[in-house]
Length: 152
Image (cartoon, rainbow, N blue to C red; front, side, top):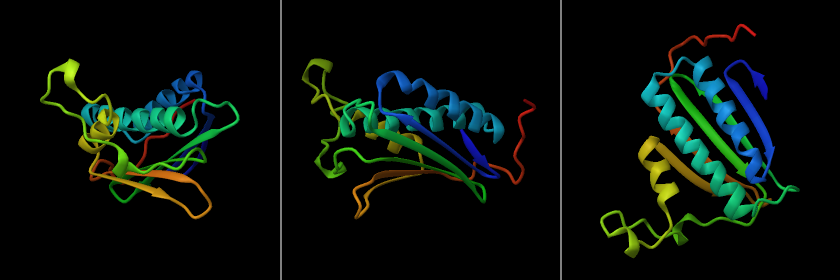
């Protein structure tokens, strides 16, 4: 994990087995920023979903592909960006989940994006001209002016 004051970054290969490192990374970021339990849960869940989607649907769990998670403390906000160079992603092609339908009648997609949008204050999907998929998520008014610094 690379860290500068107020900014953290982790890059993993896109294998399923590497996704646990994201959970550990986000736990450390949330602890460092002293986020309350509910906010930390929301941030971790949204980030886990975004990274799972990038690794599985964009990179197809290929070990030669990477997923990068960046977190930045901007004022009182936490900005999280997930980037990959997998297949281009178009969120408009993902049907919203049928939350009111019986389980056996649901369309089977879009639940992760739904959770991300419910847990975070802002979620943006972008594709850069050089082919990088980017998901930026913002949780507003969650961080005070000072960070706790780990003792290890």
